[in-house]
Amino acid sequence: MNAIVKRSIEIAGHRTSVTLEDDFWNALRDIAEDQRKTLRGLIAEIDASRGENNLSSAVRLYVLRYYREASGTTGRRRKSMGD
Image (cartoon, rainbow, N blue to C red):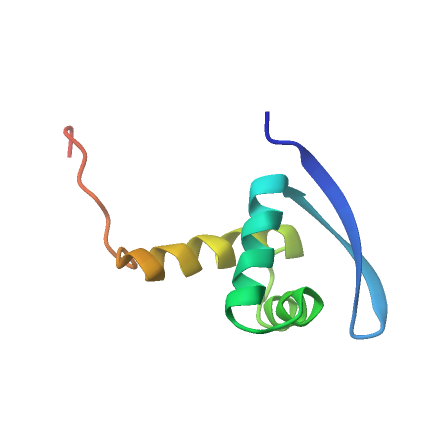
């Protein structure tokens, strides 16, 4: 079972929380390491560009886009048998 955990982090001088499954949190840590950024710095970048999305959703979408780009599937919709 993939636990959903609420984590507290300070961004731009204020505390906020991010509620993520462990897999997303671990992926975000890996991405930060790959990009040679701190986890806090990466989350601050996501926060600054998230628009109206809540931060937890914005982080999940960021992780999804990162791995889609890495796999070369960005912007492509795979057809299923019924399409």
